[in-house]
Amino acid sequence: MKPIRKAVLPVAGFGTRVLPATKTIPKEMLPVFDRPAIQYVVDEAIAAGIEHFVFVTGRNKGAIEDYFDTAYELETSLKAKNKTAILEEVQKTCPVAGSMSFVRQQAPLGLGHAIWCARDIVGDEPFAILLPDVLVQAAPSCLAQMVEAYQETGSNIIAVEPVPEAEVDKYGVIDPAERNGNRIRMNGMVEKPPVADAPSNLAITGRYILQGKIFDYLADQAAGAGGEIQLTDAMARLMANEDFYAVEYDGQSYDCGSKLGYLRAQIAYALADAEHGAGARALLDSEFSKA
Ligand code: G1P
Image (spheres, rainbow, N blue to C red):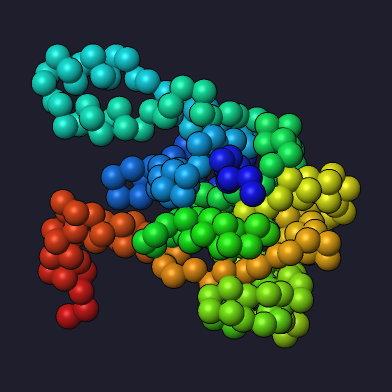
């Protein structure tokens, strides 16, 4: 069984739902407490054994590439001032040389198209996809839980979680067949179904482990929900020919795609911070609790 070495991170989106914050800053670079959102997603992937990251970018996303590079002037200045702890924090953001690739999606044709743009870099091996809009607090990391399921099944895996029934039309939703622990065999999946037609309230979380074969389906995938080429539609076709499981992971997700979801993530990650969590709690209780 081939190990999961590569992860694709689609980061080409405009971040329309969090404008104007994203007018000049990629949404993935907005801070969630003390680091850009993308750092949490990369850390989750590294914790699951990922060795190579493929970023599918677009215009005005250069800050992401720069963030994962050495910052010589900054480091020299920190060194000269003996700010060792901060220097170490900064250096930790620089990955192993050659472990990140960047490819552009020139037009916003949908998530499926974005993933297809990574096909040559991924090649013919199973790989992970992490949508950086979604942050997940979990131990082991969400992707690590999925890798475990992959190692047991050698199949395709998606992470799912229950969402309120009224909100299923915001997600890809699975049609569950049978359940074995947290692993669910599926009859199918559908992208953003009308609430009345949804096959369940189990939504796709934004974490995937897929076989390279998915690229064949993405190559001729017709536009679906929202007029976009949908990854969910290509996965539904792949499922007809290959083993596919959903894993109801153990953890908590935060959707940074909306302003309130983003605020919720800010608060959760501040509260979880080893150094500042207690301070954040005191601040919330003293200044922002209901009278
Ligand atoms: C994407 C996927 C959807 C998934 C969601 C998770 O939708 O297409 O299947 O449930 O991410 O956040 P988007 O939020 O990009 O519209």
